[in-house]
Image 1 (cartoon, rainbow, N blue to C red):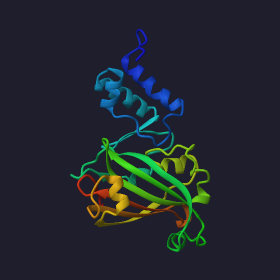
Image 2 (cartoon, one colour):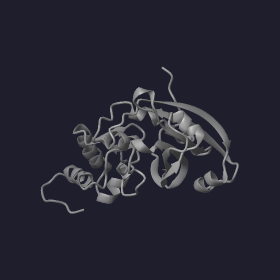
Image 3 (tube, one colour):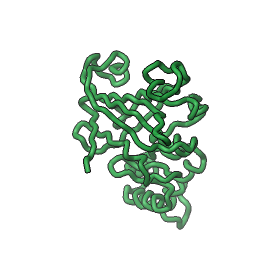
Length: 239
């Protein structure tokens, strides 16, 4: 790290993080590196990194989600976006899950999905597949389908999909996420899921089916998340 004379270390850390935001390398909804990772990269203490992040959170450049990590925040993250992020480790504790988009394309929707979205059968849907990693190990995989007409161009790899997928929906396409309905089941891993999660075929996986709504009770997303039984958990709170 190129340290400027007489400049506090925490300010240098701030500049380092902001430089990635200003350059577009990190965008709204992206999970920034952890405090230990930043400390090691910049050869400073974790306390220095924490002070820098605290300052950027106060400036609303970043948003800290307790137990999950810190995200780039160009939109209002104090709304319902994080209500739908209740995944954790096998012990049920909050844990950082880094998500990477492994596949995306346009496909013709089947009758069931199109019926749920109240659109003609075989309408174009955007298929997004993302793998969630705990440390470097795949813990879960998301298979989601979206109204392609509402998210034009997102099938292109030129458009970055951040860790917090809903951020790009809200920020780039100005489509609010109003609510989601979920059901939780369990099943044996299919060949595809087993290969992605590096487990045996028919090994137990948690299955979370989600239907996501935008304005006027319109279904915008149908998603199935499958997580390793030994690494992944789902929790909710009833108030």
